[in-house]
Amino acid sequence: MKQLKEIFQRKTSVWLALELIFVTLACWWAFDPVLVSRTVTNLPMGYDADRLVRFQVASTLQIHEQMDNLDAVAPEGETLLQKVREMDEVVEAYPARSVPIGFHSVSSNGYFFNGNDSLLAWQYCFMPDSKMFEVYGIESITPGVPTSQLTHDCEYQKSIILTRSLAMGLFGTTDVAGRTIFRARDEWEPDDDGINGRYEWVRKPYHIRAVVEDVRVEPYDRDYAIAFLCMGGPLWNVPIIARLRDDVSGDRFVEARRQVIQHELVTEHCYVRDVQTARQVQKETIEVTGVGRQMRRNLLIAAFFAINLAFGVFGTLLMYTRQRREEAGVRRAFGATRWSVFWGFIREAWLLTTVSVLLGCIIYFQYATAHGLYDGFMSRNPAVHLWFDDFGTHFLVVSAVVYLIILCTVLIGTAIPAWRICRSTI
Image 1 (cartoon, rainbow, N blue to C red):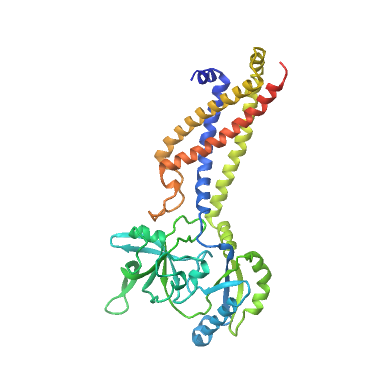
Image 2: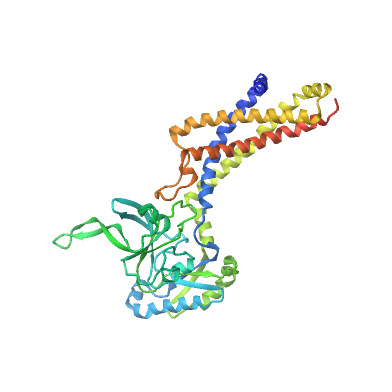
């Protein structure tokens, strides 16, 4: 306490403390969204996006021609699927009757009910006896229902598969196979005249087939609430999702095979017009969406403040330490060693930084309690709890990061001139 009092008796120390307080506030504002965003984008997706490939299927026929010749066109989808499965690099493939996960395909969401409890979840569809879960590598956690059997014995628009977090959020357990869940949807109810009518909010029951491990929809989606619905339909013009072998690079596969695929994967009326990896699509999605622009803006702001922190604090500390050259010389003349003088500078810098950052965090705490901390994501599932969901943990984690960054900068800025002063002759 005595040493701290001596430090703040110096006018230069007071100005340096004020500068560090301002830097703390600026770093809090700049680094908080970066830490939160990076936490979400680095969460596991639940599948290997580098090994997932989408084959975009197209047809030479117009839509009305395809519908008129559906019996002839539909088997061609099976033919293309079999050709993909026979490729040397492919482990397994399935037809994505609905939009596939991880390829920025627009999906719908809806409310699912268990009694009075409800959750908003993404809805993805699978066909009976398909290989969707094997292709994605999504493991079943329901005893008696292995991953290879997940899509068996499923009924059209009656069977449903839940992710772990959705089951935990609605039921509080993953042991829900065989139970019933209700899906809310708008259905058109015509009037007696058969012409007019209205949409009514109804709850449709689904039989829970099994529960699988968590999967995320997009890299910037923080929730794991997904419901897989059993659907059906013919295989015409639906993309084919394939999983490559572990020793095969997805990017190299696409680059090497794109021209060959467009010549080999062809039937009478259908063909593969393009092929992409899930990772490539996700990178493009982050670049073109507002989320990607926001993340880049946050990173640029954080980088700007980090650079200014380094140069501004470095310059102030260089002058502050050099002004005490005489003090160091006097202490050396009275028998102090070089190391004792050096560690004296370091200790004072540490005390000054600690007190300044603490005051800065206290000031920012007043703002945070009134306006909240950064959370640019819609948290819908109570079963998904991340460190920044709790105010206290969020504040402490970001404060610790800000403190460490400023402390390292101050100590380096102090150590360089202090060591030169200590090495100089008296």
